[in-house]
Amino acid sequence: MIKVKKYQKLLGLAFVVSLSVVLFIFRDRFINLQGYGYAGLFLLSVLGNATIILPVPVVLTAFLGGGIFNPFLVGVVVSLGATIGELTGYFAGASGREVIDGKKFEKINLWMKKYGLWTIFALAAIPNPAFDLAGIVAGATKIPVYKYLVVVFAGKLVKFLAISYLGFSSTRVFDKIGS
Image (cartoon, rainbow, N blue to C red; front, top):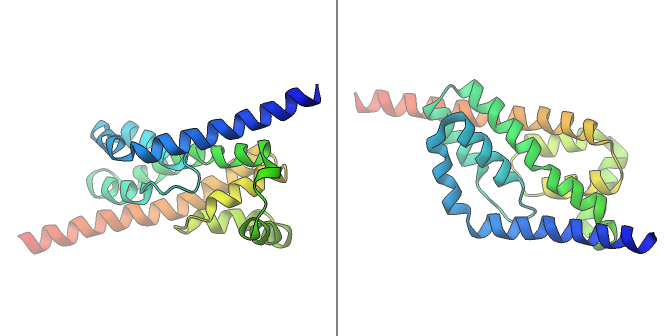
């Protein structure tokens, strides 16, 4: 029974890493999903946030989407997609704790011990690649998934609302310059 659990964890981790690599390699093809409106933005956001460590520019999705569609709805839709996508980091942490030791991991783990879920909120609210490690730490330390999802959504909502309204404002500035 213990061997089965050990292999399940390794298979889960291998799946998450493989998904990240595939999404990173084909990231240029996913940008075409924006043509599908809010559903496309949602899928781009899920896929872009499903990568671990490898950067996929979801911030650009929110910025451009905010300039084209309702910026409030863009912020909400992209935040929902990003939150779902961030589950890959959480599950990687839950399945592969022994593989993810390191200085950055320990630093975020210390922040989590000191500040709790506020660490996840802060890292979700600012554009940074360290959020993947926060998701891994959350999974490895067995933070309940529902708490993780609520806090990630709140942080991502702050970030993506700001970015989509920035995209909205920038298109208005260029419209005024052009007229």
